[in-house]
Length: 218
Image 1 (cartoon, rainbow, N blue to C red):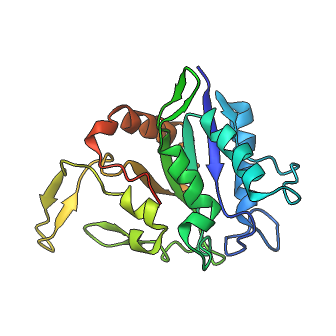
Image 2: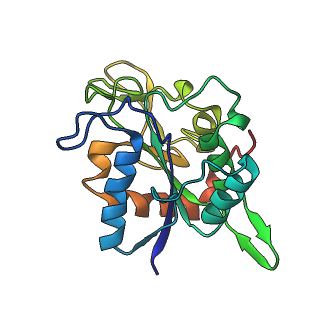
């Protein structure tokens, strides 16, 4: 069965690496790249179409359109970009609201939409750098989740029973395996090399959702 994918992103964030020959880029360009892949694979894209002009609609109408798309999807991909956060409360920003709705079981009539499988795909900044969110050390990769929306931070590294080992180099406790987070983080450059694999990983994690402390509320 084809997986239905919703993509949450900051449309006009220009602090991303240009794709191909573009002089400037926005996070939307990365959505376009994903759409091309989804069209060729066993996926159905349920996100916002670039041709859909929602600018004249009220927030309530926009929310209903987006929530309908999330309700009819099974996987949510959050594109993390360097300046995706506004100086507003999370309740007043679209990405956290879309994440919260994706994490909630929603009832409509006799149908219940299960919590979506989820991924956080980190986009390179305008210099092609990921250090604003992830740094690599000889013995561990560290994700600066505290700089993200709180609802993302709370749903990363949130496995109830931690799989850790003590590093013999730095003597710290490091996570092992790929099931440490309900919303699994991955860099764009790694994600595009194995899109199917990472989406399948998110689906496997979703099937074991009881093993995670899920934070749904903003």
